[in-house]
Image (cartoon, helix red, strand yellow):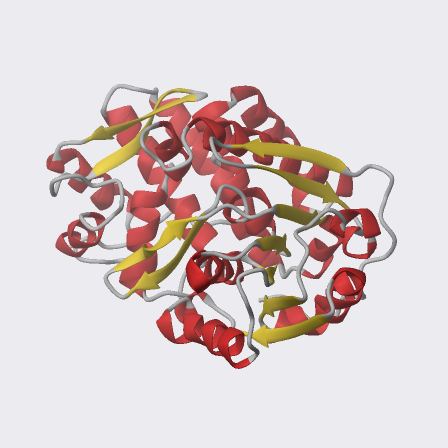
Length: 377
């Protein structure tokens, strides 16, 4: 959730960055800069349509809804807004149907453009609605959280949660553009900022050890919302994700490495009840656990595990998992999307900057859970 105390972003800075995502079937740009909500160039060249619909939640809409509507008004004859309940616990069929109800009641056709204004929950649900309404309408990601800007808005993964598993119902469906206005991060509560840093941190161990060094050296600046540091963090994260998505759009192999820490993390989220832990908090803890598993499998030394633990804790994220029966862990991890034939598979680090998808002996997984949770049963 974002605090409703920030002014509407001001004029764009001159230092707008652009990262391209190219898949087999499409290409689109990620625009990164401060003040992009009010920059006409950010909204030109989008698909033409008579109607546009902005999907958001009440908190973000109060901050930025009017600014976005004014920015896209020159391009669309009719613009409406639909607001979804705020929070991971509402990333479900009921909330998704609010979007469909609005589209149908408003007579929206297959050229209608959807704009996802918010964090990962809004982005995922808007993308899923766009993928399935009339079998596909264009949509634009306008992420307003750090986590969404560096991860969930990029790459076309769209989904809702199920009580038995996170993001288990969805589709691959790419946006036509991603507009990351860094000024919207000024309104982000510190807990949400820290949660977003988990998804920044993960890119270092899996793909870029130099970036991992940079994160360690600049973490204090990121926590202080230094604009230059945030610009580099968002840009480099998007570059790394764009490279992976371009090579493996539908997660047939390489793209799975982007889920480092997520097998443990998703189990925490589902086991504790969606919303109790933020996604980034669960991923941060999950990365420490996955690093421990990597060491147990002979991929990295114990010093790397300690390095990850310290970095996660410095970022304001938990490094100790909640108390949960060990069999519950296994039950939840078996419905992870990376599992095959009932076999749980994990993203492990073979060396800093190199990751792989591998199974692990149950005994090792149990040991990691026992050593890294508050009270494993």
